[in-house]
Image (cartoon, rainbow, N blue to C red; front, top):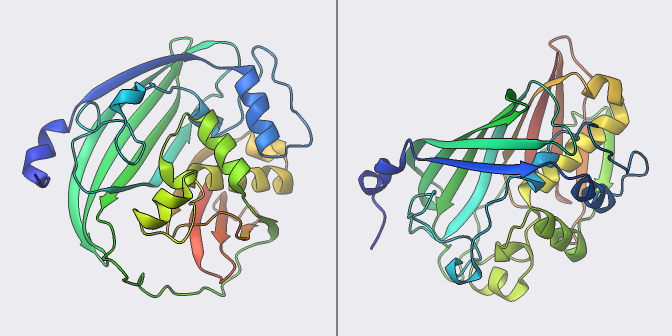
Length: 289
């Protein structure tokens, strides 16, 4: 039975709470995955780097409850949307205080909106989640996350032509080439069993993509790592807000060109990730206090 927007609107307002202890060993593993050359130990009560909370607050699903795509079964916290493709479309994060290594923390999540739209690929359903993170009874981080669901492309169809961008916003640049082991490590750290990140046969034959897809939050983390290296930890310690939007998929073993602007007069840092053809895969913006 196909999902109708009316049948799933009752999920708006649904809540989920997850507790966790912020782990220094998990942070060390992510640092190794990102090839961090310094600051690779994380003692108790040191700050967890921004965006690394995505490796925490995971509510594990039993193996028997996973769907064909590897995601948790729909209809529990997330609504039972029948459209088969799902992606993390965007996030907007507001940082108040850093999460502290070794301390207990809590994430309170709520579905705040479900909306149907129509795009190049047909019907789209957007689900908006609001996450509030607490530590020591204090709100430390708020995140608004948007998920999008859509159909598989028709058999033997071609993806719509994409526009290349020659615009260069980067005062600082880097090139990365995520491979299968990096995708596997990040999937393990985030307990993400979505098969498009590690199962080549499923990704190409069922989902219709040309190759494994690099995780959106991994690209966002690489962009913020570039900002740290380029602008200095003192500047990024004053990070107030970070927003990213996934615009096109990035594929395994392909080069990704990252760019980061200098801090502008509005206290913004603009970031971008483009593929080898100059097509933008992700756009992001950081706001400094």
